[in-house]
Amino acid sequence: MPRTQQAALSAVPAAQQPVWPDPAALRTALAELAVQPHLVSPRECDLLRDQLAFVAGGGAFLLQGGDCAETFAGAASEAVGRKVRLLGQMAEILAERMGLPVVTVGRIAGQYAKPRSWPTESHLGQTLPSYRGDAVNGLAFTPAARTPDPRRLLQAYRTAAGTLAVLRKQDEPASPGDSLLPHPRTSDGGPGGNDFFTSHEALLLPYEEALCRTDPLTGQRYGTSGHLLWIGERTRNLDGAHVRFAAGISNPVGVKLGPAVNPDDVLALVDKLDPQRQPGRLSLIIRMGARKIRDLLPPLVEKVAAEHAPVTWVCDPMHGNTFTAASGHKTRLFDDVFDEVAGFFEVHRTLGTHPGGLHLELTGEAVTECVGGTPAVLMEDLDRRYETACDPRLNADQARELAVAVGGLAARP
Ligand SMILES: O=C[C@H](O)[C@H](O)COP(=O)(O)O
Ligand SMILES: C=C(OP(=O)(O)O)C(=O)O
Ligand SMILES: [Mn+2]
Image 1 (spheres, rainbow, N blue to C red):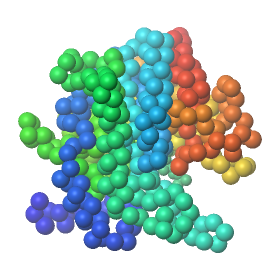
Image 2: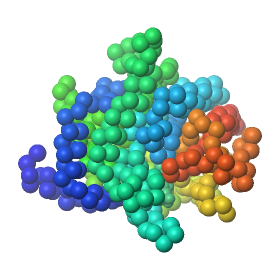
Image 3: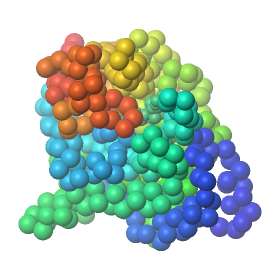
């Protein structure tokens, strides 16, 4: 790219970027990333887009889920296996109860960067940079851990590759060919079966840009760090660098929409991110909170439907329902999570549109981070196994219970 064009690109403001103290080390890491093999292939991304087109059209349901913040330490194959098996069980429950094929997408193999409400955090009189995900800095509250280190970008790439290898079962020579990842050559593009895709928030633009590749077959540009890349609530500024990045790749993309969004913003995002109105290209991931969804979602759906834009409507019932418990833990109530999904289904049923999917923070471990469910996690249990690096996740029991309950919503008159 000519220098002037590069300068113009970097002139577009990018929100939520770390302050890297060593720019030369950042350049070195990015140069190394730029010559690595792709993590996911353009054909796999196309296959997910085709499957999401079925979701957008009402013929399938999307289950997207995984950690708020994946950690490098959490990438052990056993933990990945438990998470992926949980998603598989949920997909089966949903498919059976809804009578629809389910497209399964992990927040996995790349969810290593976090936007934060505050750039710094203070404890006992000491102020340090906030934890921004393992791709940036460490969770430990020490100056060394919290200093953004670009070598972590390379570790993010390697850890994602390791997780993908687990998903592709390359680490189990005894079962070659038993990959969970898609086999585009043998697929007819329809959803269902055992295909499993990856996704994460495209937050760290230098990392994402370094992993963009041009497909020699079509000349199209793809982000090859994950199959589906989404833009977060804090970075969806229409004129910002994240929207511009997502507009320039051919992957399926998502954008989170919180309570401050208005219908005109949504239409402008649709125009930028899906100007061709291509089914499966754009997921709108709604995260309003249980008490707001029934009021705030209808005008958005009406506006988009009036334009006949073929978006995939997805419900994230996690991020609008977070609060801090008296014990100081960030948590969410299972009942609020379910209530937001119920509101999402009610709105779509009333308007005649398809409640296309769920976007969840969950783990296969028996953590105590969200309150409620059966067996119930109580407020006083939070401290027992509170292990998340960022937001509270549903544990395996809570996640399965939610799948059963959501599956039941589809059957309601
Ligand atoms: O996962 C989403 C955000 O990164 C997270 O909710 C921000 O949390 P904070 O408000 O503690 O910064
Ligand atoms: C940062 C996240 O969500 P949001 O952008 O909706 O706040 C997230 O999904 O972890
Ligand atoms: Mn989160």
